[in-house]
Amino acid sequence: MTKEEIEAWLEHVPVFGVTDAQGQGVILRPDNYTSVLYFFISPIMANNTMNQLKANAPEMDLRVSAFSLGKIWFSMLNAGDDKEVILKSPGSEEGSPITGVDYRLVPDTRDLLGARMLLTMNPEDQEKLKEKGEMTPEIAQEAIKKAMTESPKFNETFNEIPVFLISQMRMQKQAAEGEEAVQLLPMYFSLQNMVSTWQQFMSQASPDLQGTEPAINLMSLHEMIALMQKESPIDFRNVLLVPPTPVEGGGPATAGAGAGTPTVQDPMGSMGGGSTLGDL
Image 1: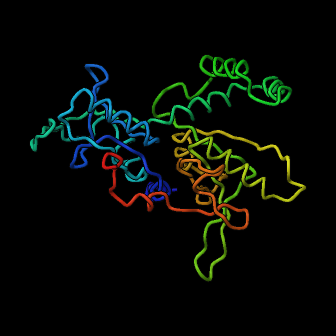
Image 2: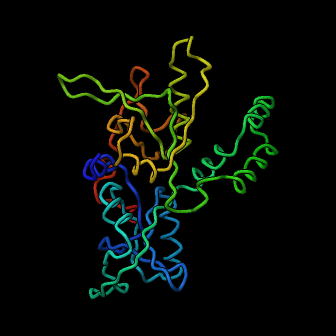
Image 3: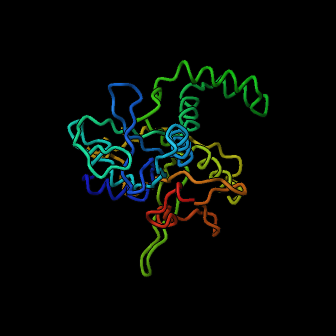
């Protein structure tokens, strides 16, 4: 896939950053040497960051703004350290150009932990869980400790974005009039969304499919996009990257109410374009 095709493939995925009233990103300095601009997969984490900044500087007019991941993936997140940006003081119209800004994409901490647990859970752990019939506090504590100390990947808190999939799952893309429906393989930022969609799918499946164990797989978003730019047996044009959505009533907001196959919706469209969480 070309860079333009990848940008279009990512375009519907919203990420969130702390900005001023003009939509300019707020550059932070976690130490005295690094200038960092954060984008968050989770709007809640972005909102928490904004509230922390407001607590330290109440005079700053800050909000959380939504950005298209497709529009910033190559132009910002992977543009290199020499990309120039204009640095302005709060409330100032004047600014000075700087380079060396570190753009960081931050996953939801729950999904980061979920990815680590999937990578460190072995067959013995799964058998122990089946014997108990539920995740007891003891099993959970042991699994979390193992995930935090033994995971071979996803040990950074930024720029390591886990993407989850179940190989048996498919989504049906809404076809235009006169066209055939297309089956897509969904990949999820949210482990909880994926599990909830699987449970809904299985509740509507035929009796011979009831009890099917999901084949859960895990990929890194950065590694996946690198793979897209090479010859690959996977046609990523038939893969849908599903943004995280709140889970209500036992099923995710992206699930369709139709014939058992979830349909594709546009999460960016429901956000009203430039609306920000800081305005709510």
